[in-house]
Length: 304
Image 1 (cartoon, rainbow, N blue to C red):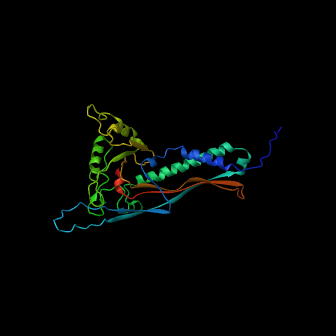
Image 2: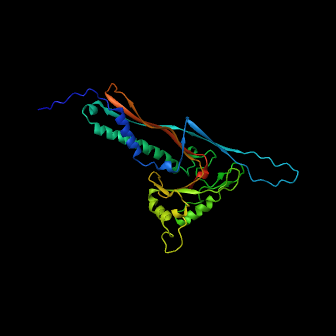
Image 3: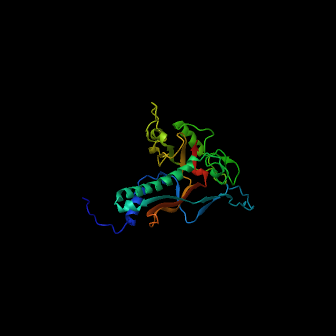
């Protein structure tokens, strides 16, 4: 005999409960990109970044002679356009009417996870295209994000934020990369001190990075020398991140203390709800706006 149940008088999913499950899903995955991108709270459809070179070195001023005049140069201008990302999910009238709320809420939680993973994938994709010469991937200065010929806009000449040839991740490789970092110049051509903040590696290099940055002595050897790259030495104060969104198993990066690798956040991920349609479907849409880019190649050093 059928069991009599009270008729549902409201087929709508409580908006607050739905938003809470979406938020739980969004907060669940770690957002590694936020640890090495400069997060910019964007207020417009796009943001503009202007490279302004400083002054060069002082020159000798003979007695009674006017000081030489100089003007800061304006280098390349970078415009980063925010893009919209969305994913919809339809819920049937029957799913709500038949009290399948757990399944529905689990799927809304997954929609929140998808929003978080979208942000991570979009951000790390900029590292995956760091060596690309496709027009859409070039910096405002006309070079790849990681190049051996980054122009020095105010003084002429170039500097390199990648090695001339890729080298496997090792202690010797890091020594070589640090030497290249010491060759960075500012837009006016002056030498600058650049610090390596963090090592960014693909998941395949997790164990190698762990040995290089956490061994007290030289990793993989019987030597009694100190490991200069261990965290205790402070050369990588933020340690390392292993990302499974990096598509190459051998490419890796050093994030420096120079600002310039940005992730713009125009609209945070939100769950938008539309009422029942003529087909008795209810629609939930996750929506966000963001963009990533690089306006100063001194902010990143890549091997690939």
